[in-house]
Length: 216
Image (cartoon, rainbow, N blue to C red; front, side, top):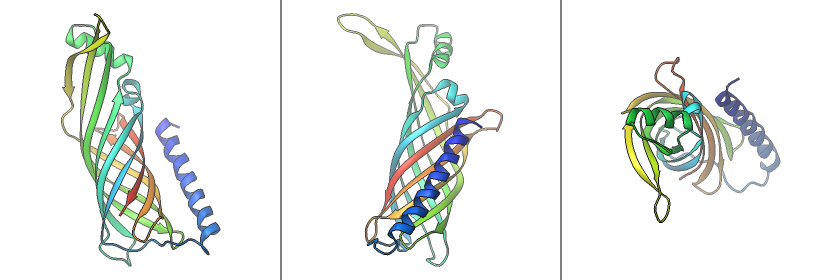
């Protein structure tokens, strides 16, 4: 099983177990409930696992995001999410070697930045009045920019930009699982893991953002 599939499987099992255990332990005393609000803001961030071709080229990275969730009807457990996300990674040696050949000079280090957005459907599964699990899936578009640098030596060691390249906006498909807990009269805490794939399946340009966030 691939690293990404293991991450999603482990996250799914731990979310389900933790949510059910917490719901059973605290249902009689927990002070807050998940109430319906048609439009909510979410702030999120966490760790991104690289997979496929990206696992060879990039270290795991960090992510930061902002979005909205729209649930038009309280009686239906279906919502729609729009999330913008920024991610950053350090480039691994195989891609640095390719860049050195392309630019015709030594390349000692590099970083990759990725930004874009997703539009997803979210299906909720309440397990308590204050906790729920959810599935989500949808599509998005992301640009990835790689920057390459070489070391320069003088009074102190510094790095100089050699060059940059960009993928342009790429189409992406994603699916994931999460859990959400009430932490106030309106606010809630959530954690989710999402599998993202860019391009044809044979290319395997994949990422797994694991995100923690707050909704208002």
